[in-house]
Length: 251
Image (tube, rainbow, N blue to C red; front, side, top):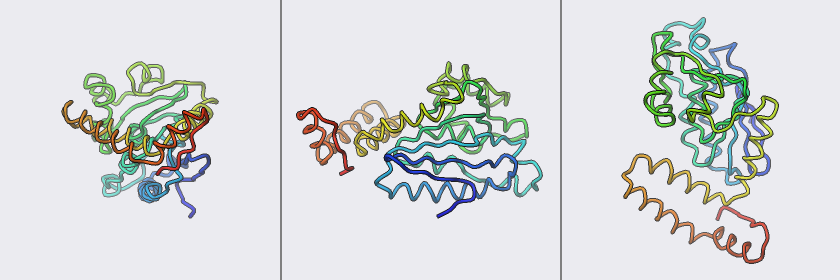
């Protein structure tokens, strides 16, 4: 079905979710939230999708989202990050412009971030007397550490792409014209792997962060044993012995 704020393209087991420009019309952010929730729920049932690429406008700072809106609308909680965070498959953010405010919170909900050299990053909510409300205080801190996260959030200042890479906020910094090409190459390489293994790996990493080391190791071992019961595991062994590319089916 057509969406107002998002366009979709699926090929080679990769779903590209392109965010249309909401910067110039902040009232569309609630609509974006609703449509992302619907899309992510649909992806959860689509076994053909193994990797998701998120791209488009990620500059959704508070100076824009609150501009021209009433107090009630400004205070309305519209989660654009939570639907992304709930996806059980790898999500790569292809950041071609700036990632500000809720835009950065969307990027933080992804697993991998590839950014243009010209991109800037920031959580600017403090400038409007607010705090990040879409996971920024939690995900940024877990990603870059308490000290740098506190500096970015408490000052509301932006940092450039090279600094973002240095502190671990983004994984790669590339020329602007190469962002999508490099992102899609990574996405296709991931999608060629077993979809069950991709899901279980993500589950082990994220759930393990909230467990003790002993509990995390047990979770990892349990998921590893589960993979041995799948047809994909058998196909992987067979393909290795026959010296060919495996054909995983997600079963």
